[in-house]
Every structure is written in C-alpha cells, then in structure tokens.
Length: 386
Image 1 (cartoon, rainbow, N blue to C red):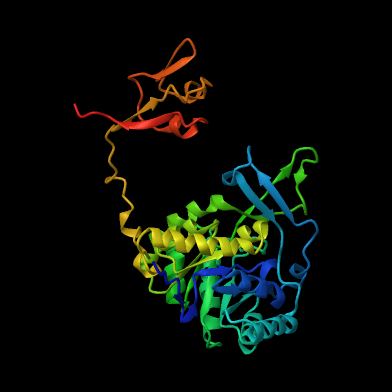
Image 2: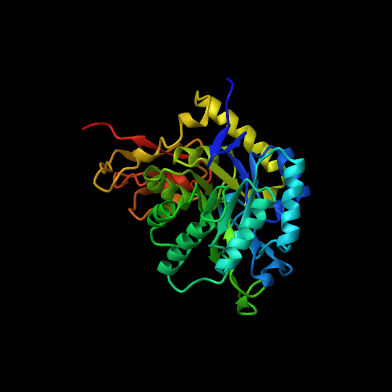
C-alpha cells in the first residue's frame, strides 16, 4: 500500500511529520543537511537566545542516567546544552545557508527576555528566510519566572507581540511544568499562535552522593527520554480537540509507533531530539520507515485518517469498567520458580508446592505478576461467567 506521510503544519508543507528539535543536532547548516539526508520533514534550528551567557555551554554537558537496568524505559538523558553559540548575525547566516542548500522547511527558534529583543530577533530570522519562528519561552535551563500565572501571561504577550511584527507563522513552545497546559494552550491560540509545541523538556536535578552536590555543571538541567511520552499523550488528547491550530508533539518520541501514538492523540507533527542525540541521524531514517510500515499495517494511506482518533476514546472515572474480569494463570512449562510473583503479590494469591507455583482464588486480577514475570510465564485469562 502506498502511504502518504505529507503534512500541513501551520501552512508549511512537510513531506512527513518528523521535525528535528532545536538542539546541537540542528545548530549549523551542515548538521541540518545531515538531518535532511536522513529523511526528516523539517528542521527547527537550535535556539538563538538573547541572554549571551547561555551561548557557551559547559563541558561535560550530557549525562546518561539509567534507573536500574539497561532498558530504554529507564533511560534519561540529563543535559545542560543551552543556546546556539551564535549571535543573531551568524545565526541568520546559518539559516540563509540552510535555505539555499536544503529542500525541507527550516524553522527558527528564538528566546529573549525583552520586548525589543523579541522583535529584533524575530525580524532577523524572518529576513534570513525562516519558514516559521518557534518562541522558546520555556527552556529548562532558562531563568524561570516566579509563578505559573506569570509564565502564562508572558507567553501570550510575547506570542501577540511577535505575531504583530512578522508575517511567518509564530509557534510558541510550551512548558510541561504547569498544572493545566490545556488552559495555556487555549490562551496562546487566542493570542494569535499559528501552532503550538507541546512540550519543552522537564527541568530536573541529579545529586552525587559522594560530593553531596548536583552533578555535572552543578545546577538544574533538562532531562528527557522515552519515558516522557506518556505525559505528552495525556495532554494531547485533552487539548487538541479544543484547538483550531495544529500541535507539534515533543517529548519521548523514540520511533515510528510513538509518532502514530501522538497523531492518534491529535498532533500534526512530532519533534525528535534525544533519540537523535543518542542514536545519530540514522534514527530519523529508521523512524520514518517504521512510521510508514505501521500506518500501512493499519490499512491507512495517510496520517489524516488516524489523526485524533484516540481523543474521544479516553474514559472518565465513572465510565471505567470495574468488574473483576480476569485472573492470573501460570504456565508450568515456562515457570522457573524464581518466586518473584509470590514476593510482589499483596493479595497472597500465589501458592507454592515443592517450588511449583500456582494462582489461588484470592487473585484480584491486577495484572502485576504478569507484567513483571521475567519468563513471561504468567498470563491474564478471562473469568468464566458465573
């Protein structure tokens, strides 16, 4: 089946929904060319900050944190990679060079702290040929405002200000660290946003036990990885049905199936960062292939056929089926008698006889033992109707 992955994002035509997020991987025209060669649909250039101190990042600035194992689920990229090292003139030249040599759309990313800076930098990147401007008001390394209300108001004010001074699409990038991103998203749309990015990275901290101090550079840092997609999906399905502008999903995008998930949740595009930083530009190629294969496997020829399909399928508290319908069952041929199921079961529902394990009638069907069994020897089976 022929699959059409093309996407319209705030009036920008993309060959596919994969956008490279603003980071070192999109810092120069040369690196942007590598991203294009790998198959991305568009590129967001590493952020130009007005705050000059952020243009020099410390070394080292990356730490890979794994929480008890080698699985991707426990993977965290802890990073303090800040702004583009360039001032506005050199930044503009990189955009000009990219626009002259690349076919994919190039989106600038700007972060300022004065009205004059926002207007000046936005006009500079527009004149350089940027197809749109992301407004980075939520950098995890930035100087945070005091309250959530302040942040929301500032995001709306800047969106309105920049929109009044440029003609290209204006796309604010939202912080995940708010009590209700849906409200902020609606406010940003009303302020004139042509699209939204949900979300920037979370701000975090890791501490070295020996030195009793923060690791690496000694301060807060951004942290991301595959784990963050679940927070993203939660807010996409709650927000996109109420918006008229498109949303670019950012956070935890690790492969083609993740892109399918965010599209099902209503997103228009998906931004990749950590996956490329830790896996190389080839990760784009593999993800694009996975995306096409998964979409074709679903019998769909375009992304529009599935966009937002999951949004009206999220059940509320009163709608969840709470009947006890399943119980655990152990396959003795696969069971190695490791005893993990017995240790974790709080219902005393695992019986033991000469190192052989079985499930007792007290099983509540919670599913935890099935999920944790290292041999996949436990399955959940439907209860027979009484």
